[in-house]
Length: 325
Image (cartoon, rainbow, N blue to C red; front, side, top):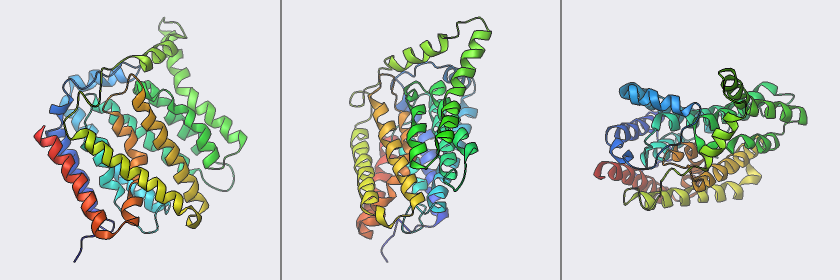
């Protein structure tokens, strides 16, 4: 009997995610030494101090967030019918991209940022409905607005409320509410900073300088030997997934079309963040959400044996790369 990765049981998908998380946090910490320096942000610096003070607790929190994120991602793909068949493949793929290739030195901040991006996307998805969806639009944008306060390269991401309003067919009134939600976290932080004696604009200047600061990370200089190759394979699979999604657009529901379009935009935006001077290996955790949802399209559309072998090769190489390095 030929293995079929696409139709793997839910328990096997969750177990595969648990294995990649365990390997990443048991052996993966060795990879983080000297791989880029995370730039301080208003909330990110607080989380870094917490991680340094309570490393074991931070690992447990980060592992739990990864597990919840992977399972939630898989659940969203089934709930909104994004594939022609029901599959749990997005669950282990999320773990592979988020922590199976590289584990950032400031993993708690980066994994929490990825979880907040998931919450934002889930709210946007739930807002695709007849009638007003002011609550989901506001919450989705509010979570986007939190990201730059945590992770410096994420500064441009709040602007994604605009394509979200277009993809999920929101009105101008809801788009304005989304704009308010996107800028509210920054305004709150600036107000608190002003209340303790700093200038009101200091927070804006801090975040802009943090975005332009050099983290020192270079993908071909500071990473294990197999990492660029694995990244190339994952990128190829994701691009193929985008191609297959576009090729089958006519057979998708309007809601699935809107969701997939937004995810393609989100993948493009998060991938381009790698060109930011402040980018670190932990950016992969943020890219994991759109990549994990788009990648299964490739495995679904390819021949069963080839797709299964490709998945097992990527999964095995990630574990080998972490352990041997």
